[in-house]
Length: 509
Image (cartoon, rainbow, N blue to C red; front, side):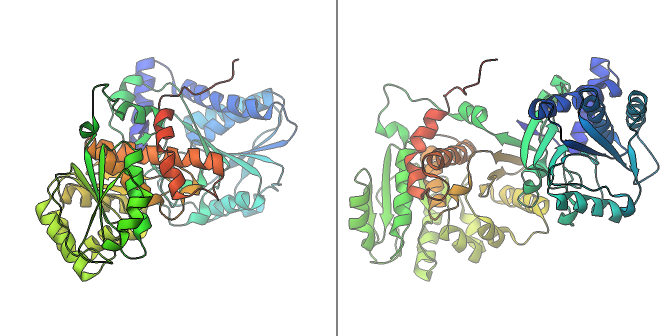
């Protein structure tokens, strides 16, 4: 699913009115009516106070439509108009009159903090103050209204976007954003829903199809692409019956140091579970017996040094190298890594200490093979690209970095971003149980295996991130968030591949 900018959504609205030959007020009725249906489906006529806060633009118009339809359905509704400027959109005015004409319970005008209503824990609040068009900070008293709503602990449903959140830009004052329990957004998700600094304001998310112009939606290149099961399934390459182990690539996993041999074992295990035909591990001598015992399916080559990597020599021609887990940052290891980069020109997957070496020795970035994949967590990313002002600034720095070095960056997080040049892919699988030591080592192994099997590096990164997250979901479903270990994620990789082709079960209606 594409993520569109606010400007692209505005253009989609315009073309929809033109090509479907409908009025903007009818499109608003259509969209807000679908929100009403979702609310009604869940409340089922419950006799609880419903308090709707409307701005004076089109998002407020949506709120008025929802309020009118809830009143018609017999709910206990109070509509509040947040009167922050004198101008009103035409659609707001039309729907304001419709509410007045159908009930004696006129909307309540809010002009300052003295007008704030009491909001109780048991209330159902609909936030329709600001939508996707917001592009500036809130007025002080409106920001205080947002804080008043948040402090109530009432259930809050946001229409299109939580008020105070901007679709394409950062918000400095996080206290002036509605913290929604649930957001129903129109047609496409918005970028702010997935940024680390703002995603928590969205709550549970539902995207409803309001039938915007299909041709425009299909032809327009979004600002990012969401990756869920359908998108991941398209990337998967089925196996040929007459293939053999050489068909699926030789992956060389280089890593480990004294006390950190487990990390390279996890990476190699994940590479085998993700389908690598052959896996060889290059590790210090101290890891030989451990790795041969842990993983009899892998071959093991050792460095001359007992405890760290100092001389990475091998008589192999692997399709891909996964480097960095557990290697440390000793000077001898840095020199060995430099020598490796100078002679190996196929794509590499680099994680952990491999990233720390690159950030401390920026000249090595020029040696990275084209199409290599780097998988940093936030602190590792900061050391690579420098500090950023906000998440949107961070994303621009990452795009520039990947363009300059012709590589792919996988930004690990609750929503993992895969970025190369101007392309951004946002993963939707995964869960908090994956916040455990070794989870990133497993991801490195999965992506390395896919590159070795012949997937293009970008495909391998996007599919690998999804499968890793889905494996984590399956492990957590069995073991709980708290009890999920990195090894459990690696072992569930096969189940994650099976899941790509399982049909979602729905209840008959």
